[in-house]
Image (tube, rainbow, N blue to C red; front, side):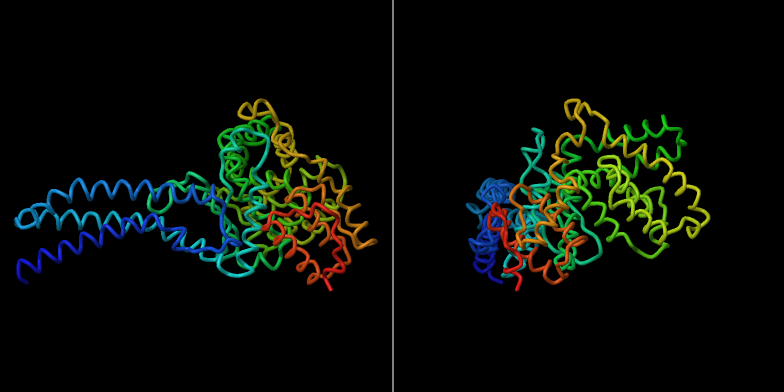
Length: 430
């Protein structure tokens, strides 16, 4: 290759790298969401902020390091240094585009005509789960929900490093594709939002100690205290789901965790997920402590009949039995402990549990079955989800009719509507 061709090739490669740097600032245009499916300006600002900062840094590096070599490009030493600099820049760009590509993958789902709108409705549900009366929660951005393969939901919290090391700009929640067909189990989204809330409020650090101390006072062994302290990493978000959705959380977690017995009785001393056997029972326990007797009593009988402890593996049976014994103490600690990080308030004081009391929701279900009018007007999106779960458990609506109704509900949430007026649902489900 002649010297002129080599110089031209270097100059073209420099321009190519400069164009790649510029591409980092084009995420919104590259994804090309329509106005109906677009994110809010605040969400875009959060997502694009790190990209703009990185692009500015790389652009400055190109000018500072590459400029002198370009001006003396006829010198072999400048050609060598420019080539090495561009190689380093290509490696840095490949790392930066991990972040770019992550959000391209997540946001491309929004192009699906209906699924994209349903995801926007899920965003609103997650946002409602987070918006509580505490200053630490007001600075969070609206989460972004997407579909993924697999059995369970998951979250990457705001601020947690992405694969390239960049802090995640907003919570990204993934739910299985199948959740869109059993929308009454979208309490999974509320649970995942609870992970963000617990961490943001500082409860992730103080709740395990509080639960362990409550169990020690109740006479639990050191092993049992340590296990529940570990399990608090999941029990806490479950409780957040309960405070948002009431008994709907217990009903849903029972359905989701109705698994083969070997899974339900499985005990790990390193996994923060409690054994499903205990995780379902604690959900019934805080319903009972909050509202007394109710549907959860029958659910508990059904659960224990389906998963009798005598069927548990012998090596797990004693631990599960002891864990079951101390569930009331765990429930009391969750409902009654005042935390310094909350200004000496309880967790449940952040919520309107009276607004989602089962008796209130049951009346709305009875009225809807009688009149065909579903009154969601005084409920938050999480409260509305609780009512839909009650409809599923108590109403004469078919599974298909309920799915159509909840589809309309999510689409309305996506459009900024919350069924502020009573909804004539029967005529809309024909």
